Length: 419
Image 1 (spheres, rainbow, N blue to C red):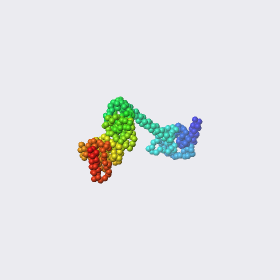
Image 2 (cartoon, rainbow, N blue to C red):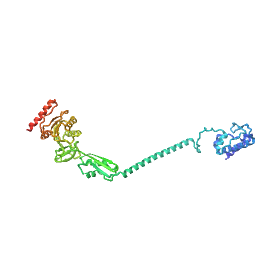
Image 3 (cartoon, helix red, strand yellow):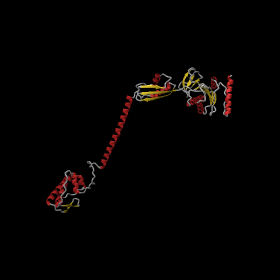
Image 4 (cartoon, rainbow, N blue to C red):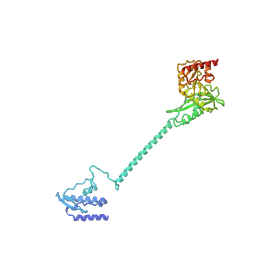
């Protein structure tokens, strides 16, 4: 307060020393005074403006230029008799001070700047805006996370509440009871269609039922489940060295153990010695090459569409393999080399018009690129030929004339043996 009173006293003494209108001129403020006391500057600007109005009304319109002494030592010119501009009613004290001193740099025309709060700088304003932006980004991320979680919860509730098993069907079943298979599968009506453990049920079916080659599960929305089973085709039966017959599929997997009567629907295998195995396991053999030859021949017949047509396999000599086709033809394939081509020739012969339905005989495919046929054999001779009980001359890869002669010799030798 004492400092403010001293400043007022000094300014009053300076005004008394001035003469004429110069004593009413607004003194120039130092930066310390301008920034230190805003209220004092506004009061001084108001008093100076009021004194100018009174002087102008008394002196008239005679302009006169005088020099006004400023506290800083500088001299400014003031025009006497000029009518001071009237300040608008809404103009603040800061605007009046700017017009009186004429020292502040004017803003560019048309550009406005939002005033900063007390004690806030431009850097503080930028940091504040950045905080606002970061806060909005965090809120947006949180909103997205909440939306995703709500969607997942709604999806899980929908799957749990609405999709229930009401119809359970077994397709492709011929050897086992339907209810037994359903009980083993382990899924009941009322279970959830998506959350039930169907994979474990498939494994249980494959483990307990050896005749199941594959099991697949299909979900038919909204409430139906279909279990499709593919049963293996029995293609061979082997008499083990320890007793009992073992029925095999095309991959030599044991389907069941039975007696001779139960194995009559499968093709008998000659030349394969085995101790046997449990159902569902691959059959072991004393000679693995024999087992591999049987597997190759069975899969080859299945590939050309003749699977299950063989009624006897003779693997006693792997260089001269025979099998009985539909009890009509004794077929020799030689070894397993180029087997696919040999079986393709056989498929063209038996499905074409070369043989009549009553023809019986032998088909020799040992040459690999052609077939030698003989249709003059009886049913008994055909079976003996396939079993290796008939004397068949070995066929060599010679000219066509030699092949015809050898074929004739074979038929003659068979006839003489029968006699």
